[in-house]
Image (cartoon, rainbow, N blue to C red; front, side, top):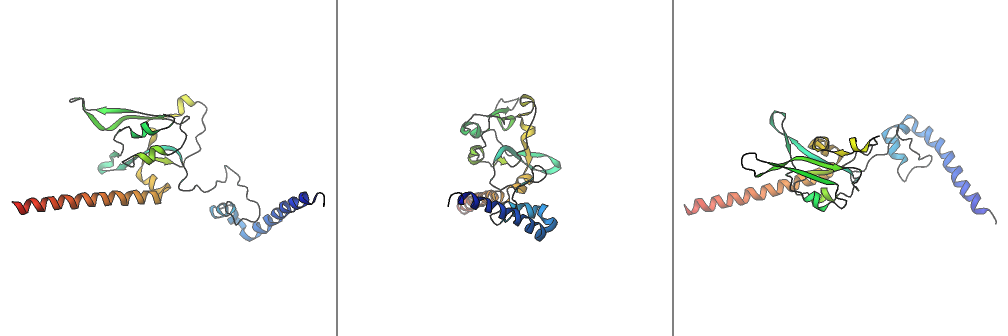
Length: 209
C-alpha cells in the first residue's frame, strides 16, 4: 500500500512519545538523576532518550580520550613528584606535532635533569589520538575526560603549559580506575622482579665471599 512506510515510521515516533510518559511515571524523579541519564543513554530506553545538555550530561566511558594531562604523585611535605622525565617520546610520536618540551639542565654541570622545565600542548592542534599516552614509558601522560574547553581567545587559553597540564595521580585514579590499576600492577611486578634479581645477585656475592 502506498504510504505504508510513512505510517509505520510515524507509529514508531508515536510509540516513543507514549512510552516517555510511562517511563516518567515509572521512574519519577530518578529520570533526571545520574541513574536516569544512564538509562536514557542505554539500549533499554523505551521513551525519550534526549539528554538536556548542559544541565544533563551523558556518563563518560573510561576509554574516552580528550586533551592529555601530566601526572604527578604526592610525596612528603606536600611536594610534587612529576612522572615525566622529558624523554621526548610523546613529542616524537605525536601525529600533528602539538607537543613540545623544554628540558631542564643542572646549572653547574649542564647535564640534563629528568624533569621538564616546561611542557606545552597546543590543544587546538591535538587530535586526541592517545598515542602520547600509549607510548609513554613512565605513565606520565594520560588522556583526560574534560571536554568542556570552549574559550574566546585561543592564543591566550589553548596553549597549555606544564602547570596547566599537571594533575595528581588521584585524579587519574578517579577518571580511569581500571587503567590505573593495570599500570600500577605492571609497575609493582617490574619492581618485584628488580628486587628479586638484586637479592639473587647479593646472595651470590655473599656465597662467593
